Image (cartoon, rainbow, N blue to C red; front, side, top):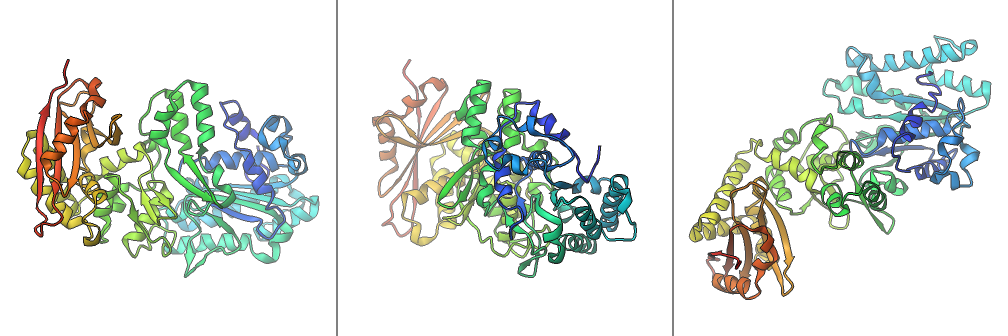
Length: 531
């Protein structure tokens, strides 16, 4: 089988033998770019969100060396009036950059290996025009002139050399120069009808501009019309859950949470690999750690920038963190601030970005587990102290040490709340979540739990086999802690977890905003459900 020039449709044929989720609408989006001024597209998205699947599909659709009509029959693209017009009508240049990295000895040899490999493929299939002395763009130009078919370039994992820890600055520079030369403007229109280049990172910046300026970029932050084809949409996941007879609400809790915008529409996106693993195994867990991670989350949070440790704590507590994304250089070395590191985590899929709020948050339970595992390995002294403080606060609650709970809450409230937002019930809620951010080791957290006669502020329910009581936490300001306990009883909040069957502690935390000392108070009472 041809490897680089017209690789055929075998890759997509194998995908179609599985329970294929129809993503062929992507082809229509790419078709609209062909032979236009925006014919070169770079689409970046997190690992395991379907990049390689999309590349195989596009190769099968455009490759003129095969007939893929039967493979696309009945799929979305077959309903498009342009389906037959473009199907199997182009030469395809297919490059999986990771495959070259696995073969090359010394990163400086990457570009010569790519060039040599493609030229050998040209020699085997276009012997009459092969000339070892000519450049690769010139040889592609000659192929187009010979058979009258332009190329569609499909480059998978384009940014692998940029993410490669073994790559030198010089080898990365040569690689970017190779891509610039391949798609230089004076031959692009003659050789390429289009290009679909995909990776995790957007194109590395050269100063304030893209290092490969000919490409139109669509990142996880600005996906444009490619948004529905980054991972699985909610409707697609509902279909998988129905087919596999598994609960959609659990799938949503574990793998949803990536919020993308296209125009006025907000699209909820799921991690495609994790959804398929959960559907296949009938088990909800973190499949994230099974991927070949570029670097550990811990390594990035451990970097020497003020605020990174604190940001990780707040994210794990379920809070949103403001982030400035504009200055990120789209590589793994040019960090200048905590914002740059946090922006990288957006592209890696560890957090999701809320455009209207210009803030990040952890998207789902799968990633929360990764953060929970990471936080105890962080070496920032401040974070280590806060982990210990959170553990001690939990122990104090369980032991009924009311004064210790009140003092810790007061300390964290003063440290973490901006003064103009201090006297606010939502601020107090954020403080308790931050104070107990290590809860995941032992508890499941539920907020504003509907009891039928009101909402319990926060409930911490012990995980199975954990020897802890459930905690029902009520937050009050300008009122006494005792009144919070009374409200819990009056509205019978414990009844909502009556099937839990274990011990329950009622915890009320309050302070008086008129008190200049901002002193906090706590009441803790054990509750027994009536049989």
